Length: 367
Image (cartoon, rainbow, N blue to C red; front, side, top):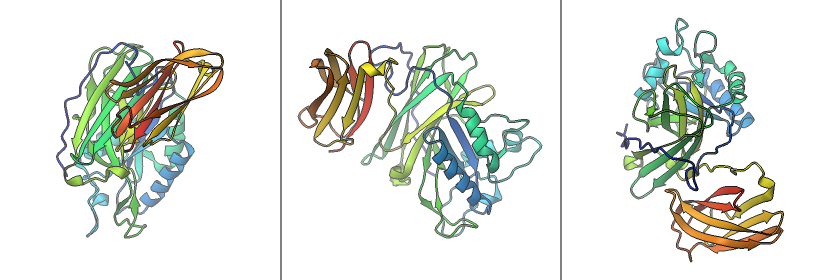
């Protein structure tokens, strides 16, 4: 396993301003569900568990995120000859009986939903995953999580930024876990096939600590925290086109997960929704996306007004600005020549504001 290159998390104490947050919304939302799934290649019932995962993801798209763990401390995870080794020692701590299922023993397929203790244990059979995940999705979250991820094919460096906006005060200490998962891995699976396709497989932890990196300072309603991570994919051992970044925030005392989010490892980005709830006054659509030459920005307004259109890179630098666009009531289209304004390949944010409403959209420039 490649030794990870993880930068010390950078914690920014930021007030909400023009570019105080771009990846995460400020309006209260419900929790997302994180399924830490335990499965092995020598586990016959695990194929049924994989089918259950697929059904849950189809039922709750972009609300449930999966980390397929193959711990070393199980005989069911030992690879077949000629197949890649999906095991990772980092997952062992989650599969130890004192944490996983006190007094109940270990089994596969099984897993945790937001690490919540249901009854007396975190351990859930695959038949309990769907209902337990659904129960999480109706609970208000005290925090919103947003992620950006960029991968450089030349340097093989992965850089990840995570924003956490607290919509209510959290008194207990918090910890952020950031992991890399990979799908479309071919490995023999008992009760499957020699060329079985494995998905959502845990590959690396980008966060430094086993139970998540500490979010420093008090976390009151309205606070924003930003942490950054990096990972060197030496030798291109992981296919970043098939990989995801999952980031989730937990209570550092009882380890229960508040919420989390997932993005593509190679060019993944979440963007904050409109700050104002009265989005009918201002609507924005952008296309094509990805864009190579001309970006079209459709802006609809209810009455004549001036708006500001800005483009930011992922570090928050303004790379293009039109401060006084005069619009007439109805639909308006602005064409921006990407090459003319000098945007290189990568991810950017397009922000339109009329002084009351502000809408942010993400774009990917592909030269």
